[in-house]
Amino acid sequence: MRPVLFPWAAAALCLVFSVGPGRGESSTPASTAKPGEGGTGPGPVFSDDDQDLQRAAARNLLATLRAELAAGQKVITLPPGDYRFDRGSGVLIQKAEDVEIEAAGVTFWFGPDKGVVLDQCRNLKLRGLTIDADPLPWTQGVIESIDPKAKEIVIRIDPGYTVPEGKKLTQPGRILFFDGESRRELPVFDDQALGMEALGERRFRITQFASARVFTSPVPGRSVQAGDRVAFFIMYGGGSNVELRNCEGVTLEKVTNHAASSFAFHETLGKGGNRYLGCRLIRRPGTDRLMASRADCFHSYLMEKGPQIEDCEFSHSGDDLINIHGFFGIVVRAISQKEAVVVSPFGEIFGAGSRLKITDPEASTQPREAVVQSSERV
Image (cartoon, rainbow, N blue to C red; front, side):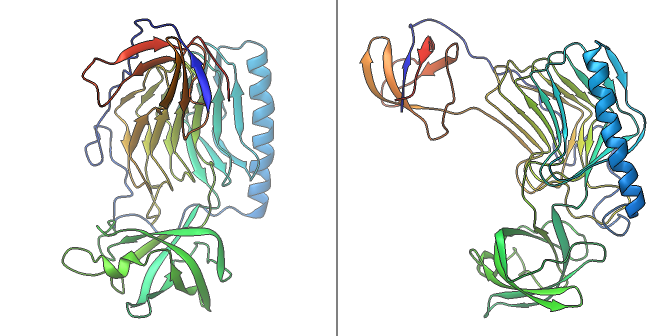
């Protein structure tokens, strides 16, 4: 718990944002990788030599980018090409102001735990970047057989995708179900795999589910059946994304993400007012991928001013499409007219200068607005 000291004052908290078209309503050209109309395989296959060249290119790119930022360059153009950032390696840009970064024709390939982070940046513009993941944070395949009594499913992994190994997962593997013909996600609860058995020939049996809801909550009109498809999340982390931390007035324009292992576009803390113009989270064209992200397409929280989202296409995520929110605390004790003890399940959610609206759901009075003067943990 922490006490919060504040003088009673009139201070408005305004979240301003505009939300563009939703799923299936994008005013930008739709992805060519439509359900059932994609290519084959998970994506480009690079030789070991190619990957080494991409890693070297990424190191050189970061060194050049940092040098140009340090020199005060206001327009920076990244050379087109593929750049590989393995596990533990990402792109961090800090305290950049009034800078434009042109990245048309550039693809960043990330591991499962890192992405692009813009930290404490103002009026920065990033344009044209494409982001993808290698390896993908999910695998996928087709259901060969399903046993409702034993609550087991046998899956054959599609060519080119990772075959899960072992009998126990370090983290529960989330499973989503898709129609075998249309490749559209089925209106059925997803589940989590806790145990599995390798069967060889790219096949494995899920022997234990977290809830087994797929067997008890059938799709309207029919149950999940052999021939349907599954996406199986096997990697977790915050990789292959763009994250804005403590930023103000940043613009992402025509930034495309094909495979995020967490939130594809993420902003948190800071004055906000960031813009997302023509950005996309879509399945990579020319592939047969079922997904584009393990978690939210767009996630914003604890921003002073909300985002502007225009002409964006967000689809095929494992969770929310657009999620914009803050947090709340509970006043458990008033110490004085200007001091109270507040608890929050989300940790430190505000400090000096934060603007609050204090309400009593059982009272008929209007909410009281205040600015935090000081705070400390208790």
